[in-house]
Length: 123
Image 1 (cartoon, helix red, strand yellow):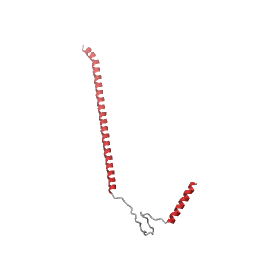
Image 2 (cartoon, helix red, strand yellow):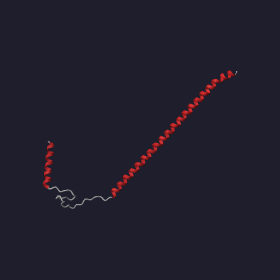
Image 3 (cartoon, one colour):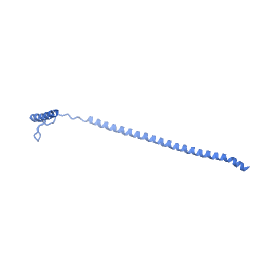
Image 4 (cartoon, helix red, strand yellow):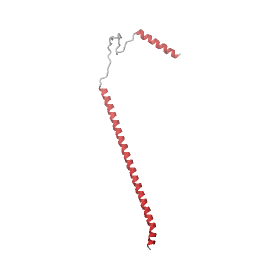
């Protein structure tokens, strides 16, 4: 009788042990899913932190650029004078804005050379 009871109970034991293995597999799968979700959440938080840092650095760069622009605008601009400069040590004379004066005959010769060169290119 005991043999029959044990024999009858063995399929039940096999089913219960298989169910236990399935439960362990499900628990392992649930654990792995939880680990993956935690990693995904950490990655999302890391991305948000990096985006916040990028935005902060961009804002800081814009602030520094605008501060530089404000300093430049506060400075007095250079205004050239209209008074003629006198001859320098090298003997050149200067025009109203500090540019060297070119004698008229030298300027005319230079203009002729330029017109000759341009005329040759047009041919």
